[in-house]
Each structure stands twice: as structure tokens, then as C-alpha cells.
Image (cartoon, rainbow, N blue to C red):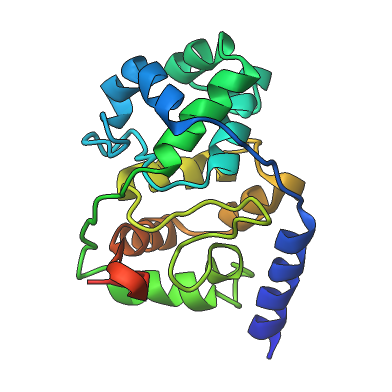
Length: 212
């Protein structure tokens, strides 16, 4: 019961966090994405596990993150410099383009699936780790109205890095410090396992994101 209350509390926070809407031109975004493709791939599917895939991500979330780099809420030498010169229209167009792309499916480490699934779906009540499912949904598709990202299929290495950044307080783009509060009570083992589990969530037709 306590774990259910934790999930319900997180759902309430997610719904109350607000949203950033982005309306841009995918065609214009494609023309502007040449520089971005060096790291994120021509279709938004990164081949380097340290750089995130953007294909299929919610446009509003992508705009929010670009603004976070501009404001210094997120820090990365490459992204800070790339985002600095972008206009509102540029960000909306790039976001629209990447949101329209199809994400590539990836595999989870079979040895980590059991723990990863347990953390993702149920959290860890003994250490007050909130279940990821509360904001990112049972299939990892996130919450568009609330502005929470698609996580399914994202590189495990990138996810690990971001969770550690939240835990250390180096990334501050989360509303109400939600991710910082969750990540700081996660063990390295939990972070590694849940990141791998999320990497294994993928798209399959109308059924949505499934673990394979």
C-alpha cells in the first residue's frame, strides 16, 4: 500500500508540473539538423551510446531541454554552444523534425532485466525510490500533456549518465527537483539495471513499447 501511495503521489506531481508546447515545421527542422546529425544521427537515432537518440521524442520536451542548455540548467560543452544561437523558431522546427522520426529498437541486458523491471514498475519502497512508471508510463512513452519524455529505447549508457547527473545535482532541469530527489536515493546497481531495462523497451506496431 505504501508503494502504491508513492506512485500516486508521483503521478500527482507529474500532472501538476505543467507543459511546454512546441509547434514547428518538421521540413524546416530537417534542413536545420545537419549539425545535430553528427551526434544524434541523420534520423535522430544516435549510434554512440553516450549521446541520446531524439527520434520519436515529444517535441515539447525537446524544446524544453534546448532552453535548459541555453539557461545553464543543463551543462554540456557541445550542447551549450549549439543551443546558444538557436531561436525559438529553430528549436520548434528541430523538435518537430525529430519528433516525426521513428526510433530504433535496442536490447536490454538479460542479466539486469529482473531488477530493472522491478525498479521501473514498482520502485523500491525500502529506500523510497519512486517507480519510473508513475511519470514515464508502463511502456516508456512518457506523458505528453505533462511534458515528460519518452524513455523507451534510449541508450542505457546515456540514461545512467543522466541519472547520476541528477543524483549529484549537476542536472537541474527537472520540475520540482523530482528526478534529483529520486535519483539521489538510487543505488548504482539500481541505476544500471533500470537504464538497461528502459533501453530494451521498444515500439512494435499498435501494441506500443514492449520489452524484447
